Amino acid sequence: MKEHVTQKHSNWWKGPENLCPALEKDIRTDVVIVGGGFTGLYTALNLRKAGVEVVILEREYAGSAASGRNSGYVDGLIGKDYPSLLKLNKPERAKELCAFAKTSVESLEQFIKEHQIDCEYIGNGNINAAVHPKQIKRLKLLEEAGKGLELHFKFLDQQAMLERGIPPTFVAGIHDPVGGTLNPGKLVARVRQLAIDAGVKLYENSPVVRIQAGKPIRVETARGVVTADQAVLATNAFTMQLGYKKRFMSPIWAGMFESAPLTQEQRERLKWPGKEGLYTAHEKLESYRLTERGTLIAGGKFVKIPYGFQLDNLSQPKMAAQIEQVFRWRFPELADLDLATFWGGWIGIPLDFMPGIGQIGKNGNLHYGMGYAGHGVPQTLLVGEILAENVQGKQHPLGHVLQRRTFPIPPEPFKWLVSNMVDFGLGLVDRGVDKALAGK
Image (cartoon, one colour):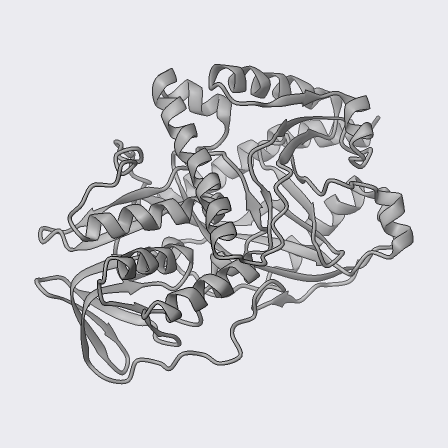
C-alpha cells in the first residue's frame, strides 16, 4: 500500500471562491459568534430572523473544520449507542433524548426542503452491520433497545442483507429508517450563503485570540475587536484552546478516505443500490458510504488523542494505512479500487457522548453549544435554534432536553491516560471479533 498524504481540507468543501474579509477594525454588535461551522451559522440565521445584529468570527473559512470534513451521516442517535442510553437513563428520559435526536433529523430534512438545498441528501436510513456472526448478539441487543425506545428498527439477516444488495462482507444488520447521508460540503456552503444573505457579518481568516468577559463582552482578534452584549462559542473541539469548558469533552482526531470514482463494472460488482450509510457493530465502529459522485467514503475505528489541547493539523500516514487495510478486508471485491485521498480533523467527545448547551460566567452573556460526538450534522440545527432563543432570554420548547449533570473529564495527565486506556480497551473487544474473522 502506498503512503497517503493527509489533505488539509476535505474533498467535500475546500472553501468559497471569494472569502469574506478578515476583521481589521474594532466594531460593535448585538451578538458575536465565535466559529463559522454549522452551530454558528444556524444560530446566526435564527438570530437574524428576530432582527438581531450578528457578527461571526471564523479562524479560517466557514465550514473548514468538522462541519465540512465529516462523513455526511444524518442519523437519529444520541449518546454512545441505544443500549447504553437505556442503561444510563430512566426509560422516559431515554425516550426524550431519542425524540430530540429524531426531531433534529426531521428539522434538517425540512430545512433542506424549504431552502431547496442541493446537498445530495439520500433519506434511506442507515444500517448498523455485523461483519462476523459473533456480532449478531450486539445487533439483537440493539433491536431490543429499539423496542424499549419505541424506535422503528428492522433486523436484517444475511439473506435480507443480500436482497437489499448490501456487500456480502456484512452478514446481518439493523436498519434504522431515520435519516441517511448527504454532502456536508454542499450543505455548509449553502448555509454560509444563507447567513450572508440574511445580513450576518461574517469575518473569515479571523482567529480569536482572547475573550474578555464583562458587560459588554469583548472578543479580540489579531487586528480587531468585537464588542457585543452577548457572545456564543460555536467552536466545538477548539473551545478548550480559548480557555473554556476544558473538562466537558475530549478532542479526538478522526480520519477518512475517499476512493477514486468506481467504474461501471466495479459498481456492478459492489451493488448497494440503496446507498444506505453503513457502520459496523464494533465498539470502535467503521463507517462506509457511497457518494453521488460515484466514490466510496471509508473511515472510523482509529483515532488520535492529543495530550492537552494541542489541536494542530496532523499528518496521519499510519492511521491512513490502518484504515486502508481494514477497507481491503471488508471489500475484497474492490481490490482494484484506489483509495485516492485521505483527510481528517478534530471532533469533541463528552463522557456521555451528548452535546451540551449552556452559559459561562457570572454575567450570563457567554453561551455555548458543543460536543456532538459525531452526530452534529443534524443536531447542530436544533442546537442553533436553542442558542438563538437563549441569547434573547427566551425558552425554546426543547431547550431543557440537554440540561443534565455532566461528569468532568480528568485533568492532564489523567485525561490522556484514561482516554487511551478506554480506546485500547474498546479495541481489545474488536480485535477478538476481527481475529475470529481472519481465521474463519
